[in-house]
Picture 1 (tube, rainbow, N blue to C red):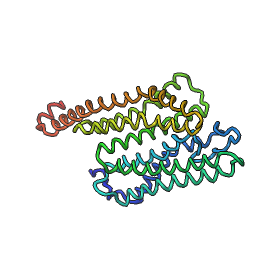
Picture 2: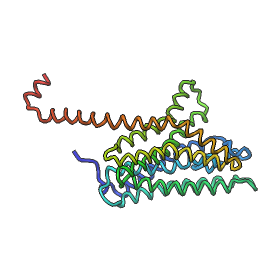
Picture 3: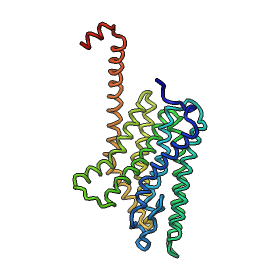
Length: 309
């Protein structure tokens, strides 16, 4: 039986395909969104973003960041168990694949959107903002990938929190297609979808916190920073979207931020509960499994035969 391949065994071609595949997965909700017949952001140009891979709209910054940052987290997690030293050609190829797909998606969106703009509209400014957000998100995606793949467990936990925020936007955007496509779903199913969109990221973060643990105690700082990124970071990003959309109502945006922080507090608490329970339960399950496996492996043949009889 062979073990999992190391980074040296992961060829540059496979690394490139990993980056391309992760980027395609990240772009899935934005591509699905581009199939929609219209966008309420531009009532005078309803088909502005139809057919685009990255809709450059101020109220979709979170969606864009989720699509661009999540692939970096996927690459970092895939490479972490396979890396033993400095980054190699395979990881560089994965980064190249990620950058190539995102760059092509951004270029395609610009080529499709610009001819549809009306003279005097704010579309060019929005496209510039969208390109800037995409570039910053791509840099953050590469950083998250490197930290998850190579850095210490506490640092990787904080990077995982960034990936979880991106995954939350990705997951919520994908589930939102059920509404935009106007599927006939019962109210109970819609309620379950809302709960999934809210609490799935909390469960993912809880898994990362359980993996981090709290021994030595300085790792608790990773818990604090990861929770701040998860709880405060995404609400600040939401407030930033509102500030861009309605710059003349800064006070209202701050009120929305405060309300959002209070409303999302149960989600953050859920992440802590999952992390604590996971850290307490999983080691015991592993210990029992090892004990049982050791008992089976070290037991004399006659004892084993007696158990099987």
